Length: 209
Length: 262
Image 1 (spheres, rainbow over the protein chains, first blue to last red):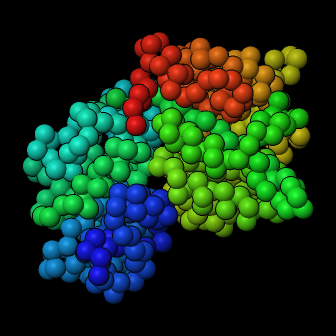
Image 2 (image 1 turned 90 degrees about the vertical axis):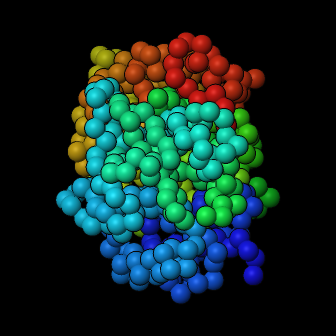
């Protein structure tokens, strides 16, 4: 088995094709996983996602991914990266359209972007520069303050500052990436952020937590 | 700080060649006469190399009859470009959204169908998220200065006012507004910064403005005078010895936040 088979969780939400090609470009061997059983055949996991939080957690639950992901991540210790909504769903709850429980992997709430600057638009759409922790292995090889592509109206507010790997400024400090143990996640889309994004994915593929 | 965006627009017509249909990159003038430029996927690859911020790919035929050919274009594009792209032209249903998104598009633009059945905006936004619903508004200004929304590729005038329509689009759940001045399309005479400004001040969504870029300074005007979050151009990048990197330097020098590197 290729040691870098990367399972892309297919739960009906997210631009899987872009993630697939980006993983290939970054040197990994992507595999779309439409069932929880398929996660057994991969070494690493990508949890993508666009759309609404509530639909995301419902789809994950209905397709049996919630338990399978918990097993893969916490018992088997497989490295996982969440992208955008796939990051937010790792929080304990979200306030998007009501209050909805998440996977609870991070002590964090998902709250609406609240910009101090009325000229800034919601959602945040576009390229924003990211400040990352100098010791973060996920951003190694990138310049200082690289630009990444964001599209979101909500963001993850963490209780534990040490979980935050990177931030961006959008009328205030906004969490751009989180990580702990074998879990990493980005609010931005590395698969849509050209060279810098591919570098982040490459770092994830090499990561041995 | 969030950067302003520079978005090349790829307009496609499905044209016969050697008894087969194939997708051809074209430019238009005031939505009329088109000029054939080349292969859309090759051009998308060039824009990737030049670090464009996003792309917009539009099927001008918009009949939906040749959806397979358009899908093939975006599948191929998705293999070679690693930036977001919007696809539009003849999108009429949530099922059309799903087809395009599942083949690599990040956002889908709707125009005629949104005017004819505005609930499509609500339905697509609820089912797939506001972030992928781009309300595309084509408009003209008459001799008295009054603006109107036009549909069906600029052939049919509606009673809608572009500013009011943008506001309704936001209420219904669109995630972004794409403005195109039919009068200025392909003329290289400069953007309609006036209407752009009106829309920007009326909605809180990101606004992309297009139609009329002929000089690097026109992009700057779109951001500074129009207040647009993004400027899109087709003709500008197709005919002149200009590319996104040069324009970006010009924008940067005007003091506007713009991405410089890949």
